[in-house]
Image: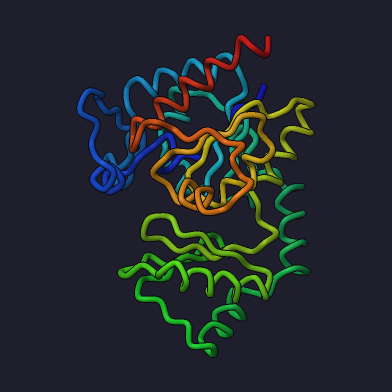
Amino acid sequence: MIFASDLDRTLMYSSRAIEELGEPKESSLKPVEQKDGRWVGYMTETAYHKLKELSLQSLFVPVTTRTTEQFNRFVIFEQEIPIKYAITSNGATILYRGVPLEEWSNHIHNRMHTESVTQAELSACMQREGFHFDGVMKHAENLFFYYILNCLPTASEKDSINDFAAKYGWRISLQGRKLYFIPQAISKGSALEYICNHEGVEAIAGAGDSVLDWDFLQNCQYRFVPNHGELAKELARVSGTNNHILTKSHGVTAGEEILYQFLKLIPLKI
């Protein structure tokens, strides 16, 4: 059985996310991510123990837009919670016991070459059309890029940007202050499908907070969505997408609720 989950703002929360979404009053936090010798990411103690239990009873697959280098900052996966697979860079990379699967990486690069313009070409096209982003631009392993914005776009501006990017084989996602531009070929759903086929098992449940997570959630029998995220807002405004479960909890305790629901499903499938 496979249980797949996004990490940031789903199971794990940065200091900024906790400040924005609210610190839990009755739950203690466990540090899980380290950067430059500092703790920068957390989950509740209860969520941590539930995740550890889940990983011992099933195949837990982390699914993240983070690069592999950024993913490796989660120290619990190295020291405390063993994982067989991880999906990083929004699905462009599949790690098998910590090592990228070359076959999958080659497949993604070939599709990007034929289905999308390059990052430089897309940036040039946006500049010609007058798109301007107030923020710092970052590149992710030459696969995609994102802006850390000082000012968020309106809903109509976001739709316009997405429609424009789609003409060139790209799509966008707004996660907190980060506006991602990602080639259509790079998909969390395709990566999870590859793992499911390779293992000969199906994905029982998944969880995620961003629109990019809907790609892989559609491969899962049960879909859990934190009520504070971009995806919850998007599903609320789109009809015909009620086949998901919105968490009752908000912020960091939503991760606790999701893992509790994951564990409840295990006896049903044995």
